[in-house]
Image 1: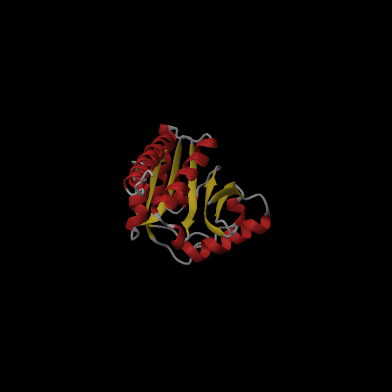
Image 2: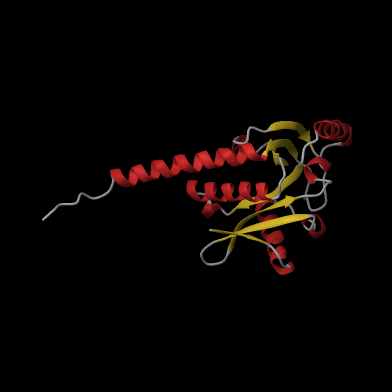
Length: 200
């Protein structure tokens, strides 16, 4: 799989359409243009995944919080002084979710985040998606809000979501360690299952 940053309107529209199919949100072009959008292509150059890093507020994850709770979250973020970006529009095609492919995708995504020199990322996910919660959990995030959200442009309906904040460096370091463990395990398995060499 190859990670690419979108640089043209046609590919961005393809990403928007595929993202709507996979996660049910049609992100406004104006919103995506506030950041960088990345796609994953397979060996046949088909788009099989993607994500967006929004670099300028306001962030949809925060805007989706009901107003009476939103001010509390904004005040907390302001006092701590996080250097934030938003991770959103994250999806990977079902036939590319094997352990190694998913890990490679996640690792590339974390490295892309670090390149943009943000210390923390904010994101939201549906509370009825335990697998996504587990995936995000590797970053040891801190919960900012959990509950009903406000319907934003491009959403079919409002959801019950969890909004979290995580440390980018910690996530990148975790993925590096995880990648090394999988490489070592796979290498050992290849050695154990290698055919015997019989000398003449």
